[in-house]
Image 1 (cartoon, rainbow, N blue to C red):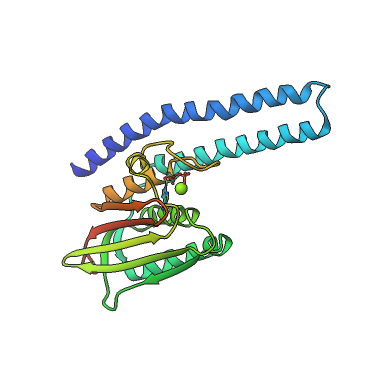
Image 2: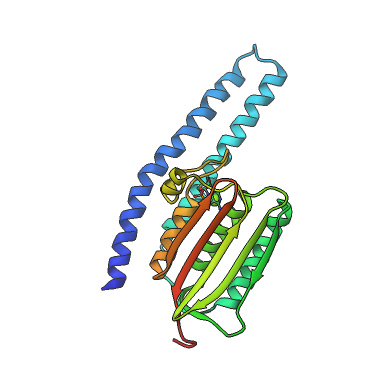
Length: 230
Ligand code: ADP
Ligand code: MG
């Protein structure tokens, strides 16, 4: 019954999104079409033409990003529910994000717990959700940035903090976070956070975000604790 509800909710979301994805893809296509027409006119200088070319490629990349993010949401593959070792996941997340952090000149610190902590859910979906959040944190920082991933147990709850000392968000931006296509980035899709929030909620998780402009952002993500083998 619950599974059926989740499926119908997801279908609704996916079909709503399909309409807006179509709309979002039309924009770059229109731009590219216009510039290709301009490229065909003889008057433009070589410099101008290479500029048009650059815009075309960027717009096509943008369309591709939108499609990739949408497909990751629409994927209908069955949920693979298992017991997830959270300390292992935090290490995994820190390792995956490290390459990206190095590239952006920011540091990564991960804190795990002495005792084993487990939750129940789809490990690959969880990874996808946490990687999106971690990537945003890295993208929000400049060279003296520090990304921290901190795992704790609070009663019967697993609490994960993903924090950055980056640009932060205004209350207005914070409010729009998670709605499709809200992005402050040149090549942003504004789909990553929405996908993450959806995944976390479906795993009975909660998200609480605190952010201050110029100080940084903390994502607090919590899940009910699961027992090994459950
Ligand atoms: P994208 O990263 O493609 O812009 P997201 O859905 O992942 O799309 O994020 C939407 C927007 O939320 C970002 O463009 C950014 O403005 C804001 N945001 C998300 N995480 C953070 C963060 N850790 N610090 C500052 N801003 C953030
Ligand atoms: Mg993002």
